[in-house]
Length: 131
Image 1 (cartoon, rainbow, N blue to C red):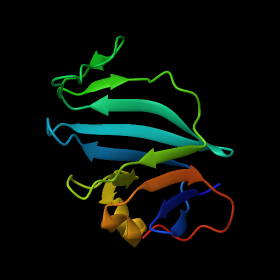
Image 2 (image 1 turned 90 degrees about the vertical axis):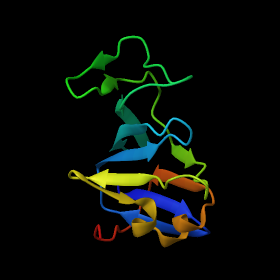
Image 3 (image 1 turned 90 degrees about the horizontal axis):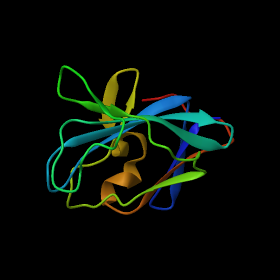
């Protein structure tokens, strides 16, 4: 199934089986990344990374630190039917990464640029080519 991005009353389907969601923490200015895989009608979080740590952002138990100062860990969460993003207009935009290339969500779903909520989910239907 493709990935659906719902924002501003529109839904865009993108041909992806796996992707990384990335963002910068609004206070600590630290980059976070989460790798997801589409499994049936759900999104499975397979790994997460944080490029440092700060107040209230300690790496979870079992995390490993790589040579570049990035903490890697596997969150213990069940597959999600929907991932809801707050998407504030007052913070840096979420990025969607595929094949090593990261772009703002608004490049995939222009309505995401408004700062309103965004939902990611697996969806049925014909995906469009990744821009």
